Image (cartoon, rainbow, N blue to C red; front, side, top):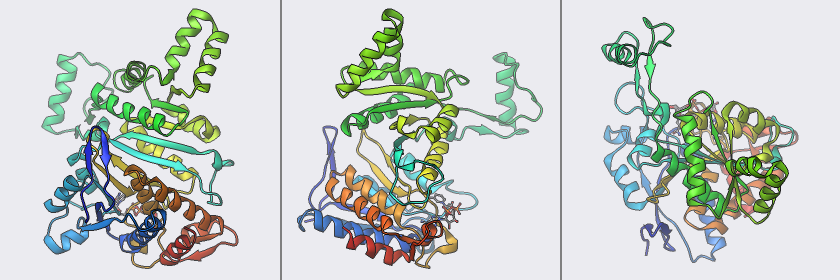
Length: 420
Ligand code: NAI
């Protein structure tokens, strides 16, 4: 009998027949969801000899919901994600005009999904703009609830903006607003709690998956009390909560001061050889360069919301772009998680059976990993990798791959199922 996934003692409990809600999505959702579901079902049946099976529960949101109920995000859909904990969604049309600003943001806020997780790795044969894309294997932990995304912004000329500006200039003595008559203002909230829960999740993930390092990416040289504090809170947390499992760059600096560089290097080498995770940091602009030049120096990335936005697209482009970049939004403290295709609804190609289902499919594989069905997830990734290596790809890839066969969405799905 189908049952709910639950969360207790910090762990998900997944029954053999879990109920998992899904939103097919607007636009190309109609092309990519059925293929994704079919491949997941086939992989699960094969990996567990028919002993495990997902009971998919269809939910409405976006245009599909609006056309039937007049609501972009029906309350039943929100409730179902609360009830069933883990779900998946295709892309949703962002409503134009008033009401909800973004459906995705509404879901993330409602469930307090504070981590936007984007794993980025290379599939052999995928067109890439860099020389050694096979060295890319990164896992981005982007903070999802704070930073300038909190939407605290005031337009120049409004009474609210004038009030904030007067407060800053008259009461706080701020003198560095260059053009006070026409300035708009935005506020960047970054908290210790918010930073710590994100960084804690990133370190735990690195330890569990035996990954070599966590890099805190920040602009602390300029924004000292938000981005700089993020870095400092991160190091302090790593040393306090994961003392015997990590080696921090701050520890290396301390050892260097006390015992010299050679000794500090030796300590670091021993620590890393014994399996400790290296915790380091890099300034965001340097990261953009270094990740292109030396991608193998980075593994797990923990960063604030805006940096995470830029970094996600940069890294996705290095390994094939948005057509195959998967994502998940997770609250590791409560267990709630929604996995999602990272691209939009691609209206121009919707319903034409040409869209690449890779992003949604790999998001589904992330979801299977998350619920503990790692064998099925691995099977999906390998089969998709084999199809690409055999040059059986959708049109977006085929146009960059000499001798490749451009397949429709369904045919690409069948090619993957054959390779499971
Ligand atoms: P988009 O991602 O839909 O399209 C950008 C380009 O990538 C287009 O050329 C499209 O054809 C192509 N593309 C996207 N996914 C593809 C796939 N799976 N296979 C092959 N080609 C693919 O972004 P756009 O045009 O800015 O947004 C369209 C709509 O989607 C808007 O309403 C937007 O608000 C919404 N959107 C929703 C997101 C979500 O639900 N997570 C994310 C981004 C946009």
